[in-house]
Length: 241
Image (tube, rainbow, N blue to C red; front, top):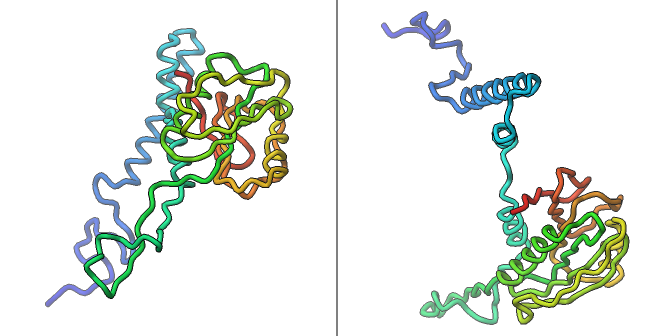
């Protein structure tokens, strides 16, 4: 006779009906082991640091293990790519199906990025190295997408605006304007006053300033040279080269 269900039959480790059994190497087991390992590393590092036995190089290694560094350039690229319009153009039928007279499909236009606003923090706390890296990212965006960038130099106010396209590459002769305190609000007020139909706003800053209380309707990415996280939008820490 066949075995009847109900008590697991073989009295082994079959488990009760409906119970999920973890297979060897189950991802949940792996995650739990990884968490335990991280805790052990953290405890050992704290103990060594308390005794003064943790060299600076090992401290940085432990920090990378416990809080892996984000590839901020990749995040920036993905953020910009999400806002790019890969529109289908019905005025130019797809050549792939040109032989099908009864089918008219649109062709895919090349990446087109509507105007974006890049705000560069020019407050007194931003050094030359940070500024050079900020401008390098502006050039990188222009080099990848045919778009118009409204480059705002901002400290406690919008101190200047440059309108850039790919025709301006390579970017030379740009002069940062500002050098005072930091207030993030004026840049967003400038966008509203100009009534720009922008795709997104990227703010390059150390994040030490006053944030607007109301989140705008367009996507916003804060590229931060500090560990401060913005109250809204996306924040990615910029690691200096």
